[in-house]
Length: 407
Ligand SMILES: *Cc1c(COP(=O)(O)O)cnc(C)c1O
Image (tube, rainbow, N blue to C red; front, side, top):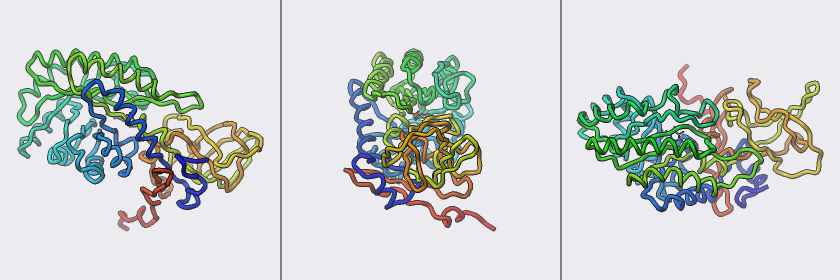
């Protein structure tokens, strides 16, 4: 089995397992697909760094003209290192921005602060004045639109912690207009992640478009509509046509910026990287407990937490095909938690110790959500370019892991 022309068995031999493998071509193809669909409007794709914060991937996307959606000072530092030329294409989201993070973003001259509360607005205005800067802002409005997805990644309802209720937004913008140091320049919205239908996107940008008109009539120069991220993919074995999906999505989100004439910002994460990445792992043991068969791999929930956290499904393939009969098994990791599983009661070709398996569609929220739980080093990462796998993050050492501790 190959990833973009690179042999997975060879990569595992060279770099060890667990190993994240990404296809540069697949990421670039997705970015181009989205850029192509948006060609009719002025736009900037601000890649959501938290989906996969690999510096090598960020550098590549910046080279294609992308900006970034960041949610922390740490992610800002990633942009500075991977693509300093893209700092002017950064939007800063998040409900809990700290003063040092605002200061760093103000000094960097980012494009837009997506402000999530009045209290944050006041602190930002104060910091901008103190530093002699003007912060271009959008309020992240909460459009009260329901998007069918996992409850942990749905964000667009009044009951969620994100944004400012859209009915309240106009008044908060008016306050912002009176504050020194901040300049209302856009309206932003992000209703959640892994959303597979376009209606919620269409409905929320429609509400945003209406607000933009009101704000302009109040005298504000609103140039940007930030429609957020959230476009989903198909994780199952079901046929998925990304081109059709992105076409329908683009039509929906472009509608508002077309009608009011605003620069469209999008913050896709998952759609660009999820299907471009896989997690390669080796089977350590196979054991039988009563009627259940457990296949134990060297990757665990600390490497890929999506199944445990979101009941997420990942397709699993043996790297070398065999003609052995299929068996119903649980594919689990070595971590001391019953939640440490990749698949339960899944029919897979019989696997034996030492064999390699690959978990597909692991390019988003895989490595970026990984941890050191059980004092396990994080996986290495390989980016495949022109058929050749290049190490873009070495495997951590135990030394790395304990370096910050004092005892
Ligand atoms: C997580 C997030 C995104 C990216 O979401 P995807 O589902 O990966 O596209 C975009 N914007 C904001 C504000 C986010 O929190």
